[in-house]
Length: 264
Image 1 (tube, rainbow, N blue to C red):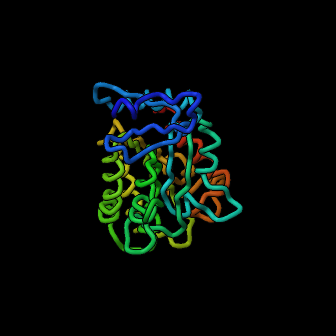
Image 2: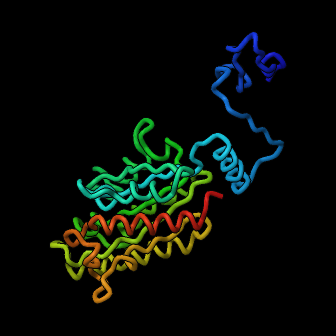
Image 3: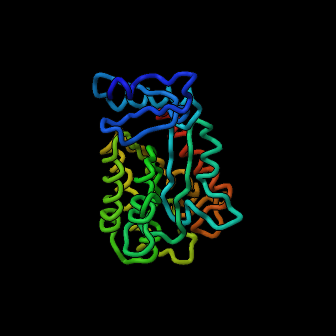
């Protein structure tokens, strides 16, 4: 930056702009920048999070930007309030939560899906382009119910998105197992086997990526104590979807995990 570009604005010239671009193409108004922090070394991820947390506290903006990706378990029909809304209330002002879930979504398909629509998106719609730094992913139940694919085939499609999420700098992932659904009309013993195998793959993924993928085991949390293949009565809406109590429990489990990991 040239001496002229870097000169401080003065009271007599309040509209003077500051250029933060070597070629001077990008300029900002005098009141559009709160702080400029410059280091003489490349910061580690932990150090960058420290800086972001400091700036968040100093200027009152969320340091944790959370996108919830999923299907109708994430975006249930009214009047049930989805877990992302409750999650935002539990996390507090240092976190911002957006529900990107779409009812009926598959994990990765030519139609409505989580990878291409919710993660990649079009324009600035996707979570990747909007620069979220936390992703909560709960997906795969529609693939299990509506296809004859194996758990390995479904998870391989899911994995395309998970790998892309963790390839983003500073991104962290909360990955949820699928809740039980044996009281649902479309449940079969064969689909239970696929569900069990799929959840094993989710648990293994978090075990293999311990530094930035964190497990919330909804299957274990929400299963009936007398038959773990079914939702607990107090969480059950119609066998597949949680009622409001179930969504609230999901929100609390995700919040507990994220707060335990922390912003730093």
